[in-house]
Image 1 (cartoon, rainbow, N blue to C red):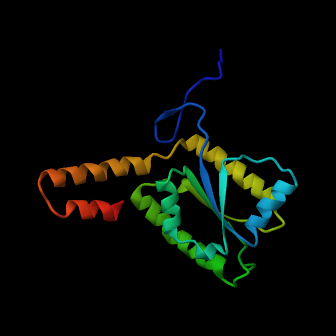
Image 2 (tube, one colour; image 1 turned 45 degrees about the horizontal axis):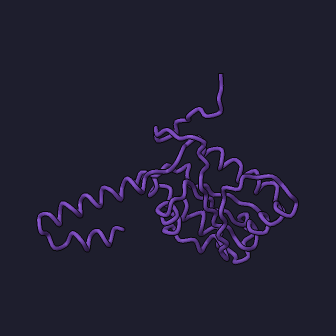
Image 3 (tube, one colour; image 1 turned 90 degrees about the vertical axis):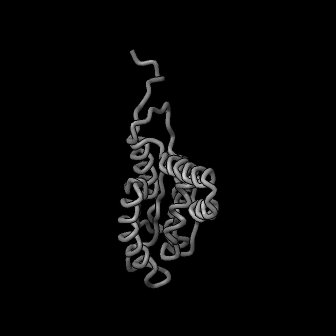
Length: 180
């Protein structure tokens, strides 16, 4: 008999009850932001788990912004902009696409599941597509479970710092500050 309080196990093996992912979306001012606005004014239903950060162009998104989102507690990130060839800044979305191809390898290297960062092209007239994208990403992240990678690494760095400090090593504090 289902009580509604069943526990789910996320992609990292941790139990969670009624997990709702926190998602940060970096969106292009000209296309995807307008599509999100269109979805809202059209009263299309989509999950409220996404917090939008409007940027002039996806080509201006530094990969460190994405890593910082995970450090600050995001469970996933959406990057979305104009369709290739439709960029208001000529080639910004091509730059973003190239960055993403390299960044995916970095995500694998540092142990972040690449499904936690998703890249989409959504034009200003595609409010329906925006709502589908958000619902799709929220569903996938619910299956993956909460992202616990950064807190685990922070503990490792603190342990290294404490061990270095106990040995009286001078550089431990500076190393910790650089990493954090």
